[in-house]
Image 1 (cartoon, one colour):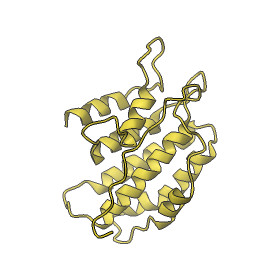
Image 2 (cartoon, one colour):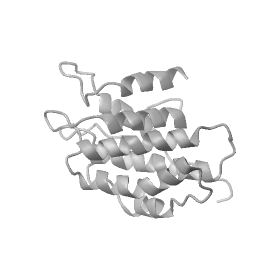
Image 3 (tube, one colour):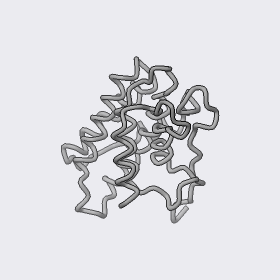
Image 4 (cartoon, one colour):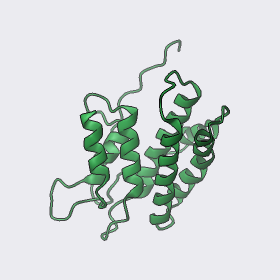
Length: 181
């Protein structure tokens, strides 16, 4: 819970990178939480990822045009898929699914508004809209297959969160095979 609150506080920063600070990589830190970077131990929980996604969605384009929202949008799409899968197979009844969906919808709308027409952001926002709307309305039929297929067939066009920093990417953990496969 302490790390979630730290991520929530970092998500309140409205700059992708803090000026004058060599370690002020706000967007990168949030992206690493959202993408479950292998550098983070223990692995980020869903609520921590949600806070990071909301923070990335609210970031404006920076003055130097270094921040690449398309990379962040791709990571958010993975979270939307995960949310849909968790919602459909929900075992935790007390989870605030509708609130999660509403916050992600708002974050994606804000990202789309501030992204200067980034096509990847627009695609993710469009594909996630119906899924998040259905969860928010409490629908029993939430279908993330189109988003899941799109994620399986596409990679982000931007490979880093900052244009000029080759190391500003997320290195996801190795996928653990699901039980029964």
